[in-house]
Length: 95
Image 1 (tube, rainbow, N blue to C red):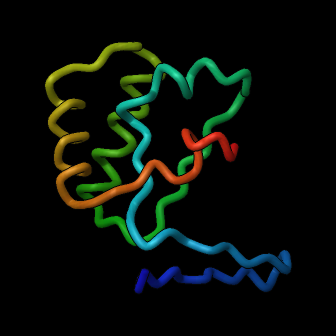
Image 2 (image 1 turned 60 degrees about the horizontal axis):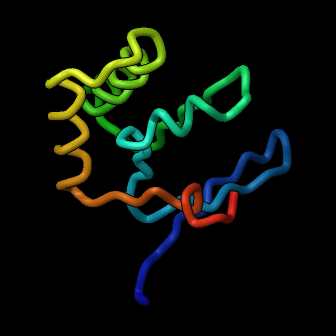
């Protein structure tokens, strides 16, 4: 495969997280995410720049509170998907 996964250590709470080699983006399936009975949604940002961070937070905020995809959200999703992404294991029956 030849794909490298970074490991992020947190020595204060004695944990290690294996980070995917490409960003995880589930915005295009947000309706399914919202149907999960949970009180919280955690967004973990690792090495995104300010513009990407702003875009990610904008999309999630709009989708959570307005419940609609507008052309800005669709544009941001397309930009993320064009740079390479994964949906992780979320839609593969693992989680």
